[in-house]
Length: 422
Image (cartoon, rainbow, N blue to C red; front, side, top):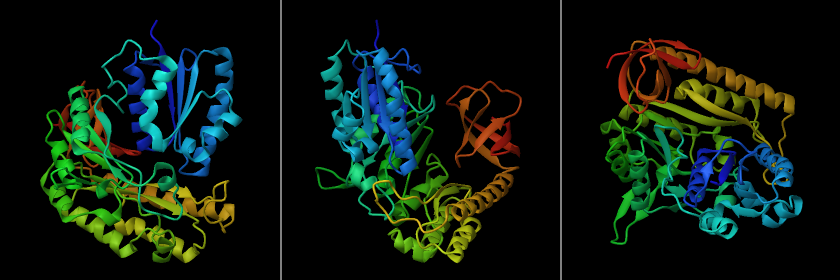
């Protein structure tokens, strides 16, 4: 009987990519993936600790697996990822004695050995691409870790210093996923546009080089990337963004605050004006590009006037979407303590979200009448190059992975409506 693996993933796209890699390690050893916890022979919990709430959710999930382990004592529980790195194997196994293996984010490349230790090599299965993001879109990791030291961020301590993977390894994975049906590749890294790899011959492969080589692979219609940092854009990137239509006209560019004083306290390394200059260069290279961002509200010391600078940045930058979070201190005392009452912090978050929603509606409405290239994800909908979901009229029954042109005829909530042209 084929053994089955159930994966529970918390957190960002990097964690999703790590879960894919972990799943492939099991698949190569004869496992199948299952959505059913009850029928699984092994469970992987890929944890997150980017915020305290994310860590708490992952820890709660581990605790809920106690009953599963009692019912299946021969089953195996693997706890991996960023919270596993932060909390450590000793703490996790002391608190949850039923956990069989703890692998931190810095040691994710030891999963193969851990699976072999618990299950042996198994019959083997080379079909290791069943865990892609979707039928037409796949993650490919280009970098691990981060060398910046933003004051609120735990990533460098749990994922380590930034390390660029060899370009041939990245391109081989992208090519394999394209051959398996992925028309869109999403290149991942914590500061992905800082990618720079020194080759054995003394040359350098830049981020723009990597994007261009990925876009040239057979079967790839579109290349996205997440998440860049305002400090690391180069003229070479903007030239490629202007000239190569396969590079998605979408940049998720976290800003965190619109206040220069808060940005300095966060150790972000840029000013409001410098951020806006990058946004302007993105739009100069591709006028139809969409930009989204991240905000933190209630950072310690943030005044009402400084918060209003974040509000005004939304319209000034023209962002189409934003992930917005309240600042919170970790239970282990890392980071500054919040100095804003919870009610006021929530009120600021609500005001920020309302401004984002208004801006998003305006931007969606501005796409009406345009011709958009849509990468089909199911029978009648897909995503535009600018990352807007587009639903096509008339149930056209399109093949997932096909690239079509559509005229945008309207909007519905956060979705574009369109008419198939070709």
